[in-house]
Structure formats: structure tokens, C-alpha cells
Image 1 (tube, helix red, strand yellow):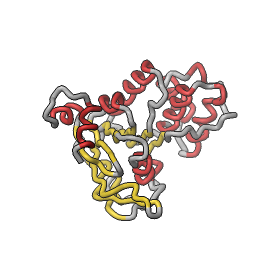
Image 2 (cartoon, helix red, strand yellow; image 1 turned 135 degrees about the vertical axis):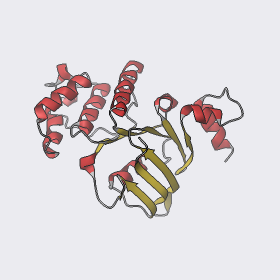
Image 3 (cartoon, helix red, strand yellow; image 1 turned 90 degrees about the vertical axis):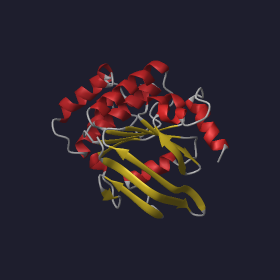
Length: 239
């Protein structure tokens, strides 16, 4: 459990003259649920795209599975984007099957049915995406990210817009994946998600300003009764 799956050292990324990531460093171990927690525009999605190999660093060093990120390693990474990329006119099964074929997944029909059962969509497998609720679409996207059984899962705001019951069910599933040695990197702007992570990196203005478990972060401030959100605001205000 101490093997580093993702290691970033002083990475920087610019869009033209705009600095998005600034000397960002972090380390994520195998089987860990690591949360990148911060407001919109702080660099969360950009970091995920860099890990995927979709964007190129300006400087710094990033290693994924012990290798420099110089090309896309999508066969070992599952990615659930913040914005749905589903085919509206295809059914739930057809959407997942499309990606299963792309990854050349063996026994794909059996695997798809297992995933549909796990994300509680088996009864909707023949329904077209256009008729699904937002929460159901989120679960289809999660099944697609898992269809090739990746050891690393990148989830960009996976619980946004979901009701409390569904968020709770998803987090139970994420914890199950972690117990099976899947590494999860989850981006979010909510402290409800943060409290479920094993380790958190607070990101602000393109940098990780502090990291640790929820308990460690709450104990790092003078007022031990602060909530995680209050801890974040306290750290930001003292920068």
C-alpha cells in the first residue's frame, strides 16, 4: 500500500500567460482514495488532464506508475469526466459496450452486466441515455470508467448534483474499490466528499496548500473544533 502510483514534483502548467498550476506537488499511494479539494478554477480538472496525458506540462516532473507522463496511458486508467460524454441515442448497455470494445475487454457482456448490477442500473440497460436522470447518467459514466478494470481511477466531480442517498451509495462503492487495491483520485469542491477521502490535498490558486487525512487537517489548526471547511478557509486566509 506504500507504492506511489502518482507522484508530482513542482509541476507547472500555463494557458498562454495564465498560470493554472504553480509548483504543485503531491504523492498518491496504491489503493488510496485521494481527494483534490478546492473551488472552481483552482486547477483540479487541468491536473487530471495532465495525468491522463491530454495536456503537457510546462515544467516539473510527473510520474504515473513509475513512468514519466509522455503519452496517454488510458488502458491503465479509468476516467470519469465532469461533463457527460455519453451518446444520447444509444442505450445504457450500448454506451458501455462501445468503450468495452474499444478497450478490447474480454468477456465484455458478462463484465457489463456485473457493472450494471453494481451501479444499480441493470433494470435500465435497454433505456436510451437521453431519457435518464442526471444521477443515472453519472452511474453510466462510472461503469464506463471501470469497464477495463483499471488500477487507477480518476473521477472529476463524480457526485455533483446527486442526492444524498446516491452520493452515499457511490462512496460505499468507491471504498469497496479501494479495498480491492484500486487507486482513486477524486476532484471535488464539497467538504462532504472530502470527509470520505483517506487523504486530501487542498488546492488553491493552482497549488496544493496542505494535505493530510481529514482528521490530521482538523488537528493541524489551533481551534480543534473547526470543521474541514473552516480549516480550508483558515489556511487560505493566512496565506
